[in-house]
Length: 122
Image (cartoon, rainbow, N blue to C red; front, side, top):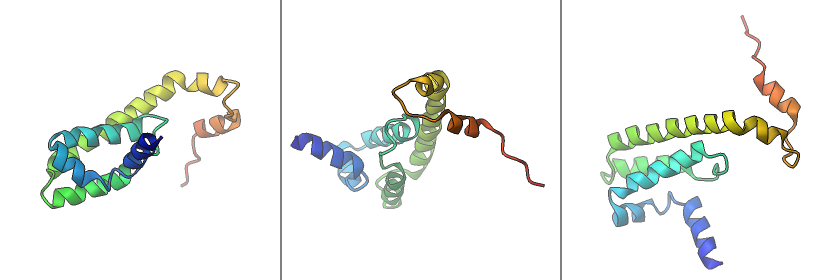
């Protein structure tokens, strides 16, 4: 049980532990950052990941010279775009099945509202 609590705390507060990750894993830190940003934006069930605060922390470490700002910019931009695209395709393929599932309480009226085009203001 303590291991689960530690893992949850570590994942939720990974921005606090980023310095330790950089010193321990070096270049593999970029892979960890990529995966976290991808999962936060791309997987429906992981919005609890600290992507925004992690970006600020990574930027601070880049300002200190521990990470390369250009590698961060390109890699994490790609992770966010790839994650967003993955999330779109998950919704495209599974969205109607999830909404139609009787055990998942999603109001069909809300879905119809999101599909309406907004009125254009002149």
